[in-house]
Image (cartoon, rainbow, N blue to C red; front, side, top):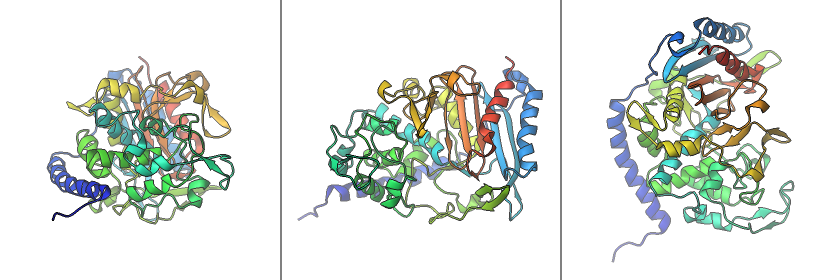
Length: 429
């Protein structure tokens, strides 16, 4: 008599077998893929001013030379051409290791658009649908409850009016909470020592803070989507991303940890307090170790050149250097506001609303630039990371820009807004 296996055992075997095949494919792809910058040109060739780019460079470096930030890498591209890529300061102050253009940074929430692209690929292929209930793939999500009083974690709960869908997760309107919020921390929801499978079961055991579809709440949703990608594709999430997103876009310095052969590219994290920089302690699973948890919401490391390639692929409608990772229509849905009007305006840190922003299937999207407080066009898309990484792309001007640091607090000296304003001023055509 043949052996009998549960559904979860079949899923695990499917992913395990696919992982072996993927490792062979990935090794073949990696042999031909190396870190690659976009083609470089003089600023004037793409309607920008070299003098104003020089001012931008001097201004950013002033913050390093003055001891305000440990170091940075910044890059600007326009119309697919790289016009600025510079580094300054230190990757590691204690070791006196100078910052390099290809330094690797923990990009935290800038992982979300990359992970969301993987989801959109499966939707485009018909393997997944926006209206699919998450419980079709993770059965425990069918039993989730909603707090009667979200401000009281001990309050009674009730069944939601409907279940969470894939679209809810892409848009952060499913009622889930953020990994760093007290609700999840008090229940030990997120640990890099967990697997994705273990994590999503912890998420499913915590009541929702709102009825699905009724509130925008920045959340752990994208990490849950990573588990859905595993189940639908039959591949481990990191293998799927490498094979279908990172390798085709030649983003060879992007992944879930800094491998031993790339250790000289690692940038350390520093906390700035009262003018003093102190090095942040390692996570429970260091970033130099392949973690059990492949966290789509916040787990990737990357470089400025890699992320500029990703943004350029989005500006190109899903293609870069002849490699297409998504159709133009699917990209359009990622980079245009898809939120229901009832949840606007959205707020990242209540009660301060972000009246200028909406959300697509992966990126924040500017819907009213007049509310931003600095120059930006409606339709600009991008996102930031909580350790001092910032990215944006503007389809109207063809410009994309990335600034990466490793600092806490991430908004120190408001350098991201200054960088954006100086980049805007450098456009002369």
